[in-house]
Image 1 (spheres, rainbow, N blue to C red):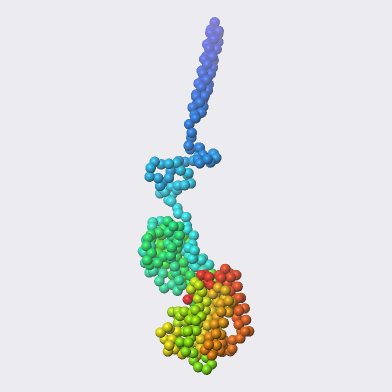
Image 2 (cartoon, rainbow, N blue to C red):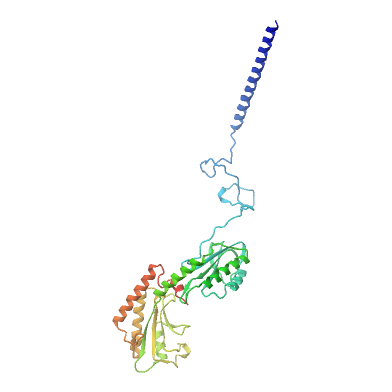
Length: 372
C-alpha cells in the first residue's frame, strides 16, 4: 500500500512540473507575438529613412538643423552643418594663393587667425618686424565675403581670418641671402605669435635658399640689354632737335631722364637716353647739347623682342639721318646689317629660353624678376 502511494505521489509531481514548464513556454510565445505586432507599426522612422530621394544606405542619420534659421529647427542634410563644440571647432578651408603670387619666385607664408585680425594693426606690426629686407614684400588679406585675396596697404580697413605674405626671391640685384630669409620667416612668426595666429606653411631655409640661387642663375643667363648708339660726326646734337625727333616717333620723357617708346598698355619697348652724364629733362632740353644718343631694348622685359628691335633700329637710322650722325655699337664701330642679324638671333635665343621655363619675356612674372 505504501509503495503504491509513493508511486502515485511521484507521478503527480512529475505532471505538475511538466505543466509548469509548458505554461511558461506558452507565456513566452504569447509575449513574443505581442512584441512583433507592436513593431509592425505604420509610423515612419526618420532616423533610418533616406532624405531628398536618396536610397537607403543602412546607416543611421543623426538629426541636425540649419544653424542660420531664426525660427523652428528644420531638418537638414548632415553634411550641410558643421557643429561647433569645445572639442570640434568649425574649420575653415585654407584658401589658395593670390593670383599675383607665384611660389616659383616668392617665399610665401599664410597666416590663420581664429579671431578676426584687424588689418591696420597687422600692417603696423609687419612694418616694424620686416623693415630692412632687401627684396619686395607684399601682404594680402582674404575677403571671405567675396572669396578673393586683396592687396594689403596702409589704408586697408577691416578684419580678416587669413593673411598671406610673399617675399620675392630674386631681382636684378641678385638673390636673397640667409639674413633676408631669417629676417622674413622669423618676423612673420613673431607677428603671428603677437596676434595668437598660426602660420599655415612655413618654408624651409635650405630649400628656399637653393631655389633662390637656381632662379638667380637662370635670370643672369638671359638678362640682356641691347644698345645701339647714334653719335655726332660734325657737331653736337641740339636738345631741341633730339626732343622733336623723339616725340615725332611717339616717345615720351620719363622720370629716369630718358625718352620711352611704349606699347598700348604703357609698357616700355625701348628707350632713348643721353650718352653723356646729363639726363634729359623737359625744362633743360633747350640748353642741352650732346655728342651722342643711346637706344636700348631690355630683352627680358619686352614681349616679341625681334619686331621691337627692328622698330628701334629703324628709328636710330632716321635720327642719324636727321642729325647727320652715325649708328655705331659700343666700340664705336659702324652698326651694319651683319651686326643686326646677330642681335636678332640672340634675342630669339634668350626669349626662347625664358618661354621654355614658362617665364615669357615681357610677362608680369618677367618684369618682377628683372626689376631693381
